[in-house]
Image (cartoon, rainbow, N blue to C red; front, side, top):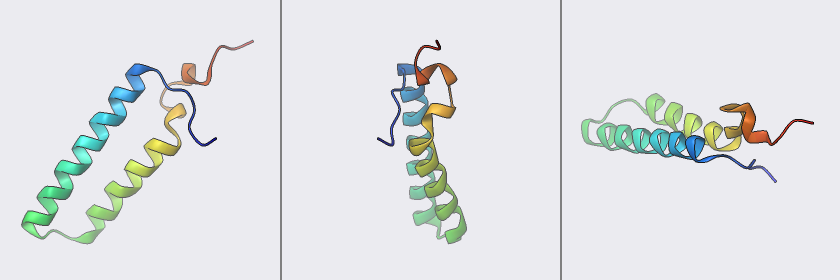
Length: 64
């Protein structure tokens, strides 16, 4: 399974990243900016999803 169990704080941070990425993509589409910004934000979005457990080590679960 790619997704680790994340707490509400990390879920909120991911939502903030997604909203910021979508806002920038809308700005990009409206003003015709370079595609490099679009690719960069897509990668940020992807990696915050796949590696969200690195945002907070406690999201990996209790340590033994």
